[in-house]
Image (cartoon, rainbow, N blue to C red; front, side, top):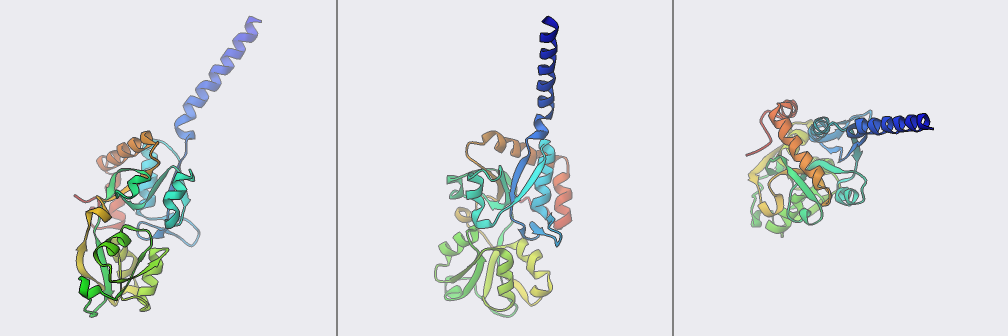
Length: 259
């Protein structure tokens, strides 16, 4: 009887240590990504996800010793999907804003770049209330850029799209007068392509703290404070050990972390 109890106890301890040993790796980190916002995220022909956000997500998961499970999600549904527990965090160039913080919590920023207008070369577009009055300005729906335009240039005609790629497509064929987006997304995703060769930035850097916030962060559910803190530590760690800089250098020729 005692021998049987001893065997059972050993078996229970073995299972306990097995689960304990696997705990850190068993808890996959499900990351919501867009896959339609180059150079931050895009999808290759074979379905592979690539981009700065994707590599940052993988680096953070590695730092946390958790397997990354990338979950594609349309931009409009990002926060609802997070709240519905479709994934654990959003790493998709989501700006930290007071409006979004009413629904979710954020890590510290992991990059911060300015927004800019893009228009056809020689168009003479003036970035002012009078200059943009009645102009068709394309931008991605549900973004901080929509907030900015509605607040500062309410007399412009906003043309809203589901993805940034659709904005660029319509700009190239002349359906809109200009587009407004993150400057890096516009530069790498459009101006440096054949479709964007006849276009240019106009009006300089644009920023409104209320709309744009302090930069892009990783969103989590409000109750997940431990995960938020882990993400903050991971961001600091990859900045300190050089991993962030190596990823940054693959996509950009300057540090996009910002001041």
